[in-house]
Length: 95
Image (cartoon, rainbow, N blue to C red):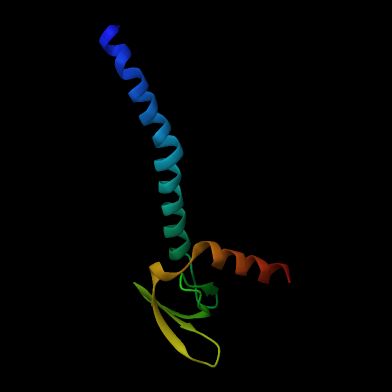
């Protein structure tokens, strides 16, 4: 038990690190991927840079969004903020 007992604190630190750091990050990453795959034409979104727009066209790796003034922008899927976009769509549903 002497040599094994020395590794118990190290194993506990690794387990705690996994459950409090790695696992939540993996879950958030999976949720973001699912969110970006489920975006459809007509959804209102906010980009990571803070641009508000409405989805006009969905392509494999990009979206075309319409912003104020009828301007259309082509953005990457990874540029959409899941948290902000979800919030704006929930506010729209409650109105």
